[in-house]
Each structure stands twice: as C-alpha cells, then as structure tokens.
Amino acid sequence: MAKTQDYGVGRGNGEPIDNAFRRTDPFGLHQEPTYAGATSFLRCKYTRDLTGVDVAVTGVPLDTATTNRPGTRFGPRAIRQESTHIAWNRPYNWDFQPLDEIAVVDYGDCYFDHGHLENAPAAIEAHITEILDAGAAALTLGGDHFLTYPVIQAHAKKHGPVALVQFDAHTDTWQDPDKTRIDHGTMFYHAVQEGVIDPAVSAQVGIRTVNDDTLGITVVNANWVHEHGPKAAADRVREVVGDRPVYLTFDIDGLDPAYAPGTGTPVIGGLTPYQAMTALRNLAGINLVGMDVVEVSPPYDQAGVTALAGATLAYELLALYAYGRRKA
Image (cartoon, rainbow, N blue to C red; front, side, top):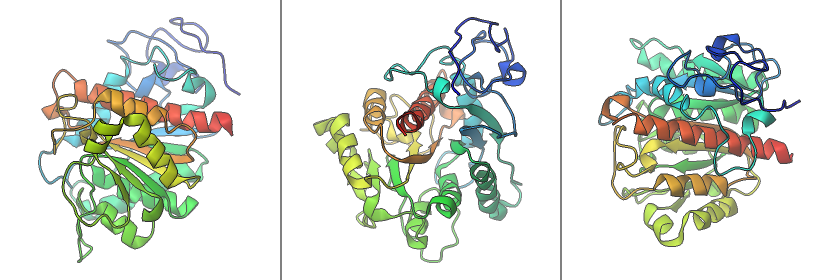
C-alpha cells in the first residue's frame, strides 16, 4: 500500500543522509542534502531484494557499440548523481507523486566483462530477466542504445512481441544482413526481424536522419512534432500502439543538442525538453511494461545538463508507469 509522502528531512522512515542505504520503505520521497550522500536514483533504496517492488531502476554501463563518441558507460552514474537535484518533489507535469503509488528501488548495475563484449548481450538479457521474473518492471539507464535490444528480448519472453515507442534522432533500423554486429544503429532492425518488436504497432518520435526503409514502423519525425505540437504527436503514437504492451525507449539525442550536448551522435533540429515532457505526459494510459533512457555521455556534457535531462525524463517515465498502475 502506498504511503503518505514525507518531505521532511530525517522524519518518517527517511534519514538525514544516505537514504540509499538507510531507508527501509520503498515508497515516497525522503529528502537529504542534494550535495551529499549516496547517489542512488532519486535517493531510492539500493537493494537486490525485489520482494514487493514495482519498479527496479538499473544501469547498463555499455558504450562499446557506439559509431561516434564514446563515454556512455558513465551515463548511469551521472544520471543518478543529477537525480539528487530533483529528488525532493513530484514531477511538475503530473498531479500525483509516482513514488507514493509504486515501490521503486535502485537495483544497481548490470555486470559484463568488457574484455568479452560478445557476451554482453546475453548478460544484459539475463539481468533484466531477473527483474521481470521477480515481478518488477525495469527502468534501465544507459549506456549506449544497443542495450535496448537485449532488454526488449527479455520483455518479449514475458509479454510477447512488444510495441516500441522510441524517442530518437535516428531510427536505429539500418540493415545488418550478416546479423553479427553489436551496434547502436542496427539493433531495432534485428529486433523486428527476430519478431520481438511488432512494427505495425510501433512508433518513432523525433527522427531527423534519413533511413528510407522504415520496416513498417510509424515515424513521427522532428519536423512533424515542431509543426503539429507534442500533444498531437502523442495522440498519433497512442493511435498506433493501442492497448498493446509498450516498451518505451528515450535516446537522449532525441533532444536537440542545445539541451543535451552530452551524447555520442548529436543531430540539430531536435525536440525541446518541453516537447518531450509534454509528449510523455500525453501518453498517459498506454500499456507501458518497460522503459529506458540511454546515450547520456558525461565526457561531452556541459554542467551536467544532459544527465539532468536524462534523470528528469526517467522520472517522467516512472510517472507514466505509475499512472497506468494507478488506473488499473
């Protein structure tokens, strides 16, 4: 049962500092100084015990599948750090506190041996499968976008082929006929060919690079969003996905690099944070079963703005997930 939120420092089950280790209840926000303490996501409890947990936040520090600038292996850590700035209040666009409605923990990071990259996809899939088998949903922090492929494979084992909702500058459906690449630009091509994504009920938002073969996925490109607005874009996505189980992936380069410079393959002409957050708010009610925020690359960031955007969007995804459970 959801608990009443306590905003006071050190009251309730919260403590003045290091709530990531000291708190006992996975519900609600518990303030502590933004500049100190263990930096779990939103100060949620670090644990591998998923008993009674609704959402496990987990990092996948992969950046060896990038085609341009690396550094996203540091993304999960940076997103957690910036989340301390927003771990004192509910997301602005929502009229409820999602952490009062769902039990959320920080599950730590997925481990794989960087010296044996060929084993990373199976390790990521197994890591997410652990979470799903325990009855929790996964909010994954990246890491480069390739990681979404094994994460979706894990979800498809539970839910069948999922509807993909992808915010991105790139379609990531470039063909790979030999099927051997571990690449952040080809994984959704593989996912469609494998049947873990149903392209007929999938949509990509914010696209602004050319790939003529859409594989049957609906593309709501960046120009369309700018011309028609984020609510209309969300309405179009809702029409496409219907009530199918949805996996939502947000590549931070879906935002214009003016707002998210810290990413590997920036493309100008992208979404504003307002457009992205408004679109997500207007997706409330979709059958969201899994989600991620990827491609935050701290070495190319300025003043943590990209990581802050990633943390805020991840918080929005928690609210989107909680809304669906709230109305269930």
